[in-house]
Length: 238
Image 1 (cartoon, one colour):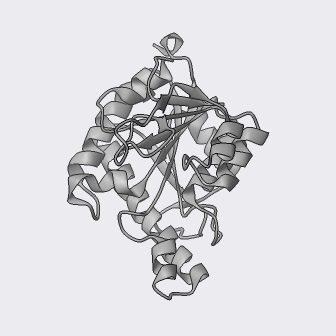
Image 2 (cartoon, rainbow, N blue to C red):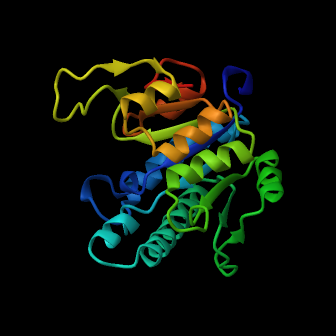
């Protein structure tokens, strides 16, 4: 029931890599199906959910730029990759009975709606999941920045950043077994310590607009629901 949840309207940031699962590239149907199964009861309980999805499982603009591509052109290709991921999510959601809309920052009316803030909010009010694709529509901006921007625009209660790590650490827990995990940390600490939670633009935007963020492990079943209910999952940044 909705009163069981601490956060009633949220934005979930999904990395493209998360959709690839263990195969490392492309879209793993099992991953998107598992995600839909986690989200279905949350939406049925009345939580309003927007999703910003990345495209790193298909193409990364920075990687293309590093190989000699024009940076803006590479970023546009990355934006198109996020649209493919968004359509895959929509397909999985609707097969599970979750009503959803894809809104793209790049106009492609045959497959998506244009991103219009008030229309997105209307969809949320009607219980539809809004999947936000194509980043901000501008090169040089990451999907992390998109997530921070849309979270502020849509007036959500919390930005949830789903990763393959169970929170924010003072160093890389993969290479440093003694890395310390934070239960809570401020945006200023994130910036001053140079922690790579999100890029500096996204971090500053959240800090300036008092947007709390939860960083948690998407691969642990049930974590989305637990985080929404205010349980101690991952790291809270505020």
